[in-house]
Length: 189
Length: 276
Image 1 (tube, chains in turn green, red):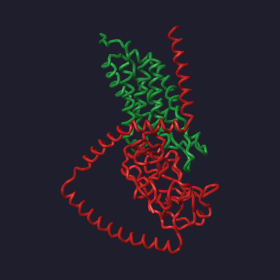
Image 2: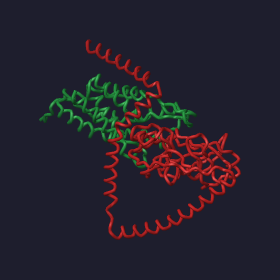
Image 3: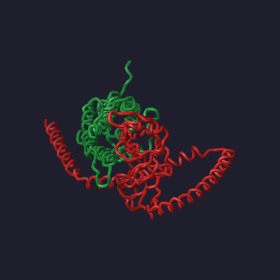
Image 4: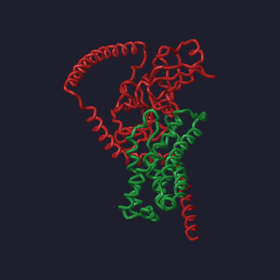
């Protein structure tokens, strides 16, 4: 419970810090810190915890990024309704949670890669949602778009081991073992 | 078996909560209220973070030799004198312009009432172009107020918190501005590109007449100003310069270089009213 609460606080702080990090030069891709902490939570916590962190993550993201459209005063409408990020994050969180048995046994490599894939999927889904919402509907998939989508995933994959290590350490400090089935490593002769 | 059942119940409960969320946020008023509340909650942290970032960059950039500083002071003194002189001259021209307008029966051109604001955060998402400023409801900021710098138009306020507001930049596809090209009768709509590259964002001016592009009535490098149509942006604010022209199937289209470097601005002004 302490770790769960701490994870929510860390997600909030990651969201703040995320605002201070500029896009990666040349790529234009963003470092999505909050989403990384959330995906770790989806992995380290059981189903109710996963749903709670994805709910909190989606709500915080939408509260800050729901866009208002309308050209004239008094014509403002929400572009993509609040709550869609919760659906997206919960779906991706479920995929992460599906790989939890492997994580419990002490493996993390595939999960780092999965963090990158899920991050790219989030950016792609956001792009598709706003493309379908805006008129005229035009699926522009040029190089800058792919760099933004893929770049975010690559950055997440590269940063994930560090995040997993630090958050595992924090979890153990709070008395929660995220990988209880991990066998102690022994040197085989 | 029991665990599976429990998971189904939890999943079902989550689904119901989700429906509740969609129903709750179906009202724009409630959405705006929640957004404003969350912005108010996060903005003290953003202010602190932005202050720390400024201190750090200030420290990094502030390490200069005395010689460099001396040179800079001299340069700034000269620039200051030049600007004072220009300002003096423009004041004279403004007065003359107003006199002439009056004599022609026009209303004296309104001067904006501006509220200075500091940028405390830039948008963290990939597809939106927004900034957060440190002024909100308490400073009489309202949604849909134009935001500008001395160089030109920046955007308009959207979500307004107690002491902070979100500003959607003109480089965002959602911020549309009616504009006119200097020296021509051409008018169109300026909007950002959906997926601009990593560098300076390009903005486009659409709905120009095809004739203007064909006959080159519109020149490359021509200034583009707000036309004042639509009720949000005042007339005559600089938007950018024409960089490229092309003829589309139904209209003419100009790619613009924005007058404002959105990645470098630190302070902006919100147009809170007009003074007569």
